[in-house]
Amino acid sequence: MKVNKIYFPIIIAMAVAFGLLLGNNLNNSPELSGKNTYKHKLNKLIDFIEREYVDEINTDSIVDLTVNGILENLDPHSVYIAKNELQFVNESMKGDFVGIGVNFYMYKDSLAVIKPIPNGPSEKAGILAGDRILFAGKTQLFDKNITNDTLLAKLKGQENSKIELLVYRKSVNKKFKFTVTRGVVPIKSVDVALMVNNKKGYIKINRFAETTYTEFHKALLDLKKQGMNELIIDLRDNGGGYLEIANQIADEILKENVLIVKTKNKKGNIDKTLATNKGDFENGKVYILINENSASASEILAGAVQDNDRGTIVGRRSFGKGLVQREMPLGDGSAVRLTVARYYTPSGRSIQKPYADKGAQYFNEFEKRFESGELYEADTIKVADSLKFKTKKGRIVYGGGGISPDIFVPFQAKNMDDVTLMIMQSGLLSYYVFEQIDNDRNFFNKLTKEQLREELLNNEKYLSGFKKYVAQSGFILNFSSEKEKVNNYLFAEFVKQLFDEKEYYQIILNEDEMVKKVLEIK
Image 1 (cartoon, rainbow, N blue to C red):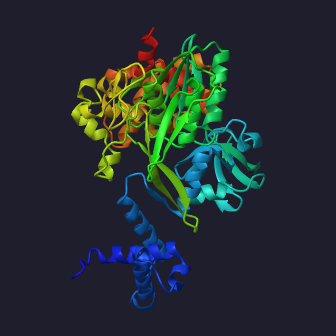
Image 2: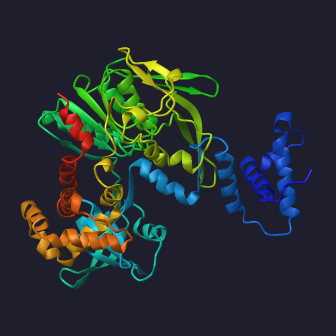
Image 3: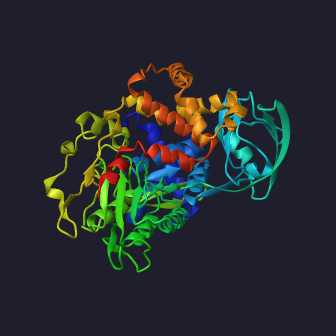
């Protein structure tokens, strides 16, 4: 039988990967069971390649390619994390890292500080918004086309280690030297917690990391002190995280012994998670906001609330991920996140959508939902009658592809040009506002919020300037029909950079269709 040349590199790569994973002990074993014969063959092939193959092989790149290829044949969520990516991934899920604590972006090939993190190492050292960091130690950071990986590696370090920064401050046209003591910088998973009226509190969770429950619980208690008796949990665009953290948050709003989730592994073992008696919000009304990018742990929380008739799910059908992964180290600094179980909501439904296509179409289903009309009309959501389940009170819910909301809210772009909305929520707006402030920071720093609003609304130059700025990026837009909304986004972004993020959300939420829908519910 002839082997297709297309597949030959893959066969070699698979052999190398399996050889590295199995180790030397297998090579030394004189006899192998029938079950392990295929592993023995692969190791023999590796020996032949290493001794006889005519060309040098980059083992690391082949192994990475091979492991990815193997996992792609399992399911879309079993993934390989290379050594150079694992630290970043783990920091995000850990909820903090050690660094200098600034939000920045590369502006005209200089590292420009958008804002130092409040109470972080840089702010304590005296670094201000708008500063350009020219040198970190002896390393030049401007006019060098430095990659993000290199830049972050230079700014991060051991806790309490010191780094000298040379900074240019445009507002006074001077250079300064600062010695910054690196410290633990939190990566927030709860973006904001605030009261949207005198009784409804709002908490936005962007992922389920190690610190999320602590952040959520603190926010919950703070809002209760402010008089909250109805809770909105915003899980839009939350791709998930740790299942255990979702369970802990669900425990805060579900009564004792209520089922939160069930998981089932390869051996058929079923593990049930029940709420305990420790919940701090077991009686007030609950609303969960979801959209097409709410996945995994977000769906566990939403499913527990919906199936137990504990609250109201508002928004659009969620992503549809019902698989549980566990991270397993491969011994060389890399790891694999392997699917080890399926999870089921309290009514018994799996919300995992089909994954015959494990590639781009699986993850980028937005376009398909857009074309079908599902993002705009609840009636177009396709559900299988064979996958009917019942909530505690007998309401019909469906499995097989995400959590369908109790109250549907169409994609905002139906009332606002799709591209315009995308741009208002992109980095373009942030960069434009930074540059406007940077042109005359002394002027903007003197304004109150009310004076800032007047400056923006009574001066056409900001709107027209943003239109030109967007055009330079390749988009020709007519903002005239959406002038009020665009100005609102502009004002919110100015407030975010000049004042604080909480006030940014207070402005944005006034125009948020899902939040407005919740506020209509009596």
